[in-house]
Length: 379
Figure: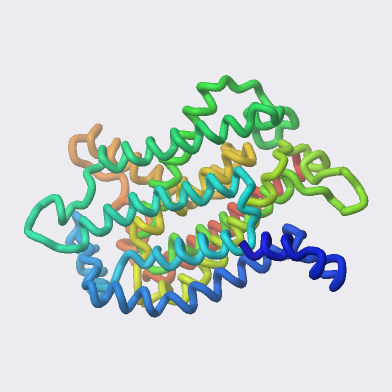
């Protein structure tokens, strides 16, 4: 919106005043980080007070007595704080991004779709009533149907944008310089799997103060860089793109998504102000589901689905720990591979304090992000 206003008055701002910076993706990305951070600071206290008035507080219950004892002080801390992130991200994207960009349009729809799904689930779980459904929220199959529905919608329109982009119709592997042929139906299946899996992975990671938000911030930074190098030129005076230099898939217009992921980065940093230990509010499904889906969407647009497994290594580990725990429990007839899953609870139970678990997982997330960036040059 702000970009379009500056563009509309370009005769004044550009030609007379010589203000060209707003046309630059990097300038608008940095502005998006600061804007989103500021919005989160401003609206955070208001949203937390509103949640407290509505008595939308968390009541953590685990199938582990020791873990319940360790988390008893979290009772009644307001959840659904992810609203701070979603409102900040969408507001900032509307201000700084080109709203006629097809990737930006789908990113906003994706964020709203999964945020509404998460909000409904949170609301049913946390507005306590005697009805069993109210306490448990949406059933797993109900949530999965809406996740898949949103993924199918986004994937279908995304593939339509890719029809005239050669690199977008290929499957790309780290360390390999050429894309592999990819059938239409395979792209749709990959998109459905990634958007559903990543949304659930972030949701599972959101179990300690600041854990999910800090890891999402690092992944967002890497995705913002990937979106930029997918379509932007190396210098104004040359047509050579970063994608051709780094042998990455070239996706025209994907650079605009840098603003979107920069907005997420600023929003989660602002949210961490209220979510750091001891948390004033929790993210809830309203934040974790759309943020996870956004991570998957960024990988799909830039054609870096496999690289996302490295970028979001912490989320992959968290998701795998749950899968392994459930599988091992069923296979052995009741034995556990970890003391508790997701795996961050396992470390909490073996004696790590919550801040220790969070900071150490942040360090792992930073290492995974650095490793992913290193693969770009190795390719």
